[in-house]
Length: 188
View (spheres, rainbow, N blue to C red):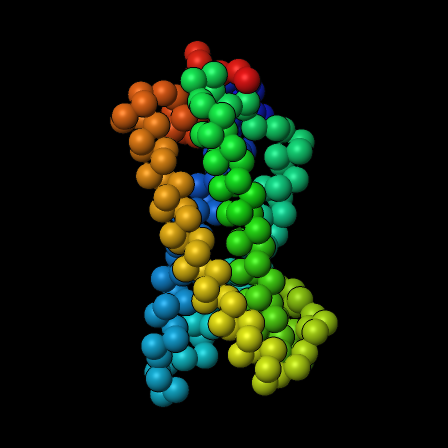
């Protein structure tokens, strides 16, 4: 598999970043839902949020890298078989997914730094608290974080279902291209 994207397929780096972000997002969603059920006396009560914050910061870096990579190695053009509506829906869905993901990491940052303390990322480095207003900031950012997380899950499930629709019903190369396989039906 090639490293860069080509007109016929996504390259190794795009494929890896796509699936890695997807796995991390779903893992973080599950971790977030689980950790809010913990009681104060549970051994994971303090550890789970620290893990969640650290992975969240790394996810933010991954998202920035992924977005930069889209400019360095642009994605393949839409398949010729796509209708105008499909092309527009795909662009809108990708933009909304990126906005939601960045919104999630930013709201998570606001929750985590509301008390004015930096985020310690696995003991390797710290991200300073730049905006801090403990009570209202944490509550509002927490509500936003939860709604954005659910929105990403719902939209990404629809994104996946659309890929399966393209693969099994339309029988086009959409899913194959995201797995790094070549597409004879490429081009704008």
